[in-house]
Image 1 (cartoon, helix red, strand yellow):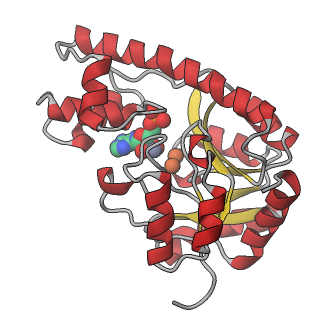
Image 2: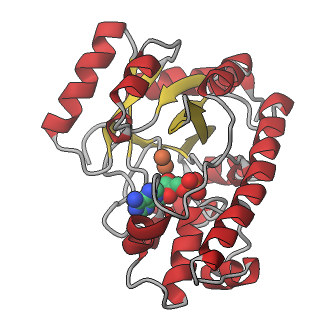
Length: 280
Ligand code: AMP
Ligand code: ZN
Ligand code: FE
Ligand code: FE
């Protein structure tokens, strides 16, 4: 494989991915990636005890996270990199998210029950066969599928769980502004995740005026044309452009690890910051 490639967007079993953090490292090694960040939703659990192993395996692992946040009641995802995953400010922030998710899951379960699709927390745990550090909508979608309430994982979102659908509940009321401030307080980089998924133009334009360090311009199976739009926007602002697959394992089989990536220059910038912030 030619050139340096670091996938800076993937999910483990600590959120809604189906590969454990160790399996992600092995897969990264197997496909010849040089660097990796595990960007679970609202949790840093994947980083517990993993750095010595990544070192042994020769995979350059840096800290990462994908936070859910709201801007004028619209949900957006923000990526953070390079902070210390044990910094109390950020671990406390993750705990707040955890509590909000518990409340949200209860509300989603209530809504589904009222619509004639009763599920329990136990059903969700059983349907997902892991300890589920962070429960999200994909786990609920899989439960609805296994219970026979929907005929596909995607239908669960299309009919009930996606934003604007009857069982949708906002993940939290934690704002973009606060999330950005926290990421900068812990000396991390703050990046707008998959900006092409933000359909509300007003929200997107507002985000582009904020104090982010960059945006995710290379994503999943994007083609050259898809990238160009975002690379241009970032260049204009002198922002960083990152790339990542948003790999989730077998619940999203069409996305493979390493399908989009970040090159050596930006990775080294993040890696240097990470080394300054976190003693390994
Ligand atoms: P949550 O963090 O619980 O809001 O769930 C967000 C995750 O759900 C995203 O990262 C995707 O993995 C998945 N997701 C969101 N919308 C859809 C959709 N329309 N179809 C399939 N998966 C989706
Ligand atoms: Zn996800
Ligand atoms: Fe996302
Ligand atoms: Fe993601």
